[in-house]
Length: 537
Ligand code: SF4
Image 1 (cartoon, rainbow, N blue to C red):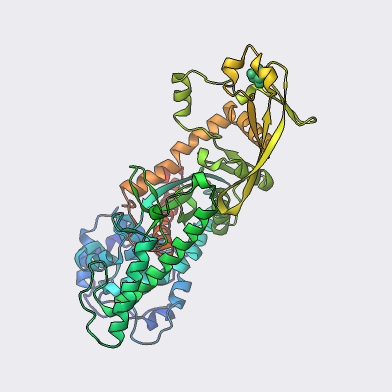
Image 2 (image 1 turned 60 degrees about the vertical axis):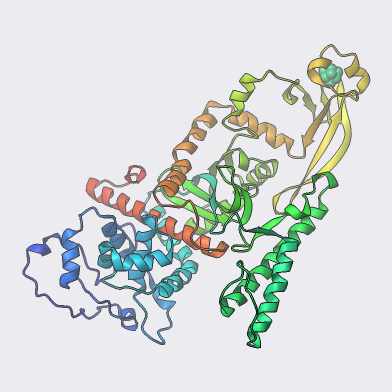
């Protein structure tokens, strides 16, 4: 058994039932050992209902709904049941709703609105949910209810997988992808336009309160007074965020400042970052980061960031994987976006082996081969640690001339020093044409973590590191391909960081549940202990 045992009244799959002459009844069986079910509405069908049996007969044995049904039954859903107060009208059973939601997510339907429609139309969902048909608003409420509990379920699955030896959860492959937010890229506004709209919105809302005719309503404004209140809240939050962005822009050096009129925001989803996606389209988006296990198809950690780059996400993802598995990652495979000097420093502090090219990508080698080297590379200058100088190929010393503090993600900074060779040496040097075009002499920059950078670059040149790094393309890249091509995760359905996190959390939950179930089935079939779940994806 990989996960906690099933409830005692769990309905096992009974393949022989079709041949039995069972009494047909629509009366639900009394719940046994499941007192929590008393507090919920009785589903229209039970496993003896003719409608349910008719679908059961037609559902293939390997249908994904059956897999989801079995996998969710193995989860301990006590926190989900306990999240209902049990007052007011009886709610739909949350275990059935979770099964339907996970099946929908697995088949690329991410919107609760779609779940409401599909529950009425799709027979496999009726089978999964014993005929329940929650309304659209109940589905939206369920999504928001289950969100904070997802971490508990993830922990159950991953800790169970570790306990069963499916993974050590200590080696992960990390990558991120940009996913479009549920907001139009054609409706971005700058601060001055947003202020004008807020003034107009205030005027119409004041008229709403006094029940006066507000006059013509502009096309961008919500039609209903209650919706206008929510719209004003969003606009005010967007204005707050834009003001922060303007303040940040003002702190930049004058030559790096952005034109204030071009600093824009989406009013539909003000939390979304703005950036260019893979197709180079400028739009509101979120950055989905995933830690994929190297030993199995399990996802060990995930997070969604409202930023367009991967900078500063390495350590938060390591922490996230630890939160879900209880185990620290000791080996991380990532691309060059995660191997900044500060990342190397953090990894050294945390005793993590990072396998990532430093400031290189897939096209670097190709570009190097095509383009002749323009300058004698920095690697040919020898660092003299004791004297704190570089020595050039001609044996001259480059001494420190300046130091600057560069801002990095999360408000962190890094010191960069500049070293220069005296101009009198460079001007007479036979290598000058290949070395520098500056009349003041060749300069070299040195990061405060340069020793770590050099050691990392040397490590990445070893055959062992290259062999380990090759696994990155076989792990996390496949996960994103699957998420986008088969799970429909090209555009989020919900708005706001919290909702997109729930959406991703449900995707990961469905995936990990199926991986663990498949591994358990293989293990049972093989009858061998310690079977890898690598092949079970
Ligand atoms: S150009 Fe200057 S720095 Fe470069 S090799 Fe010659 S002397 Fe050294």
